[in-house]
Length: 461
RNA sequence: GACCCUAUCGUCUAGCGGUUAGGACACCGCCCUUUCACGGCGGUAGCGCGGGUUCGAUUCCCGCUAGGGUCGCCA
Image 1 (cartoon, rainbow, N blue to C red):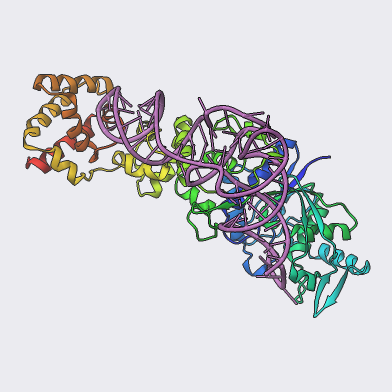
Image 2 (image 1 turned 180 degrees about the vertical axis):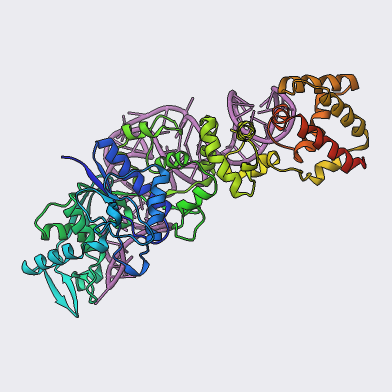
């Protein structure tokens, strides 16, 4: 049997971190089993459905690197319809489409008719209801085991449920089952919030005369305080991670660790290894709280080992977002500057504050540090340092270091006494990249200009 | 109200009858160091409660409690 799994989000304009993890687990299982990962858009709720909302989902999955084998390819602002591709460009791929529920009305209509013909569905107040079995249903679940679902008190009064609304729109339970059936889905991997509803789905499958797929209900992601994570909660939106400067590979790694473990005390696990080891029965059964601190740490781990090229790729947009126009500087300068920042900060959004001094003409000085470092006795020291730097050639980290240390020796000082005011004069900050390296990158002209400016500003020339 | 799932440091987890209950994040010390980081060493901290079963329960069973989910003409 060829494994076919699907992620079936509703386009709400928002991709929940829990939904992202559901997508990830589906993707992991498909890749592990050599099966297909299908993306299906559950846009039956027309009111909430917009092409932009679909775009959020596609972009989110692409950012995480979860490529799907079947489903939408492109959703332009006016083409959400994969049956009428414009200019000959297909907007979906796969042989089981359409992959938008809004385009599958005819399929649902036929299936509802089938149930009616079998006497398993009937009209009720303009809606169509499914004749639900009165018996408890056993849900075989790969994660939680066999679950016997008894009827609740309300269901005992009327177990039947609506499958087509009085306005003619089919509801979730119906379309979900019909699509899984028609698309040949073999494993349904979804959030545990669907576990109770699965009895309805199994009954529907049986009504259509087919065996239901295998189920794997994965635990939910909760807030740090253990409450349900809803749309408004901090960290709930995947887009937030993209914007705050997380590397997608770190987010994916973190998500893998929520409810699954490599069991060998590792935290950083390459995705290909997760694919190899991942399996459904090993998924934990309890909910997990989202620990932003750990993701933050993991992001730092990923930054430290990523290539300078990848770092550059992610850092430049973060700097631009913070208002630093790196385009005004030669690419070699930007790359050299960023090289000195790599591994120092855990988030790309923190980079602007850390290395922004490279990309401004005049730095702002930390007032508290200025009061401490630009003291009367440091005036002559800074002048001596400036003179030593002015005479320097080549202007490299090694020569800068010896020049500073030699100047300190001549003044009978420890290097640190010169290091701190020099850093402050050239960056405006007390913390930053390695001093000698940042001076080299800044270059002789900028360094001397910044030293002069500090001397003028704090010592009146 | 009914039904379902779950329960190891604050958090993520390893454990699958006998362990000094292991790792990671966070936190606190010390070391390294030109700053900030990184790294190294050490530390605080955990089996929700009550019954069983067993020579022996974190581990198996039952109950309780707590948390989460579901019971819609939302998905």
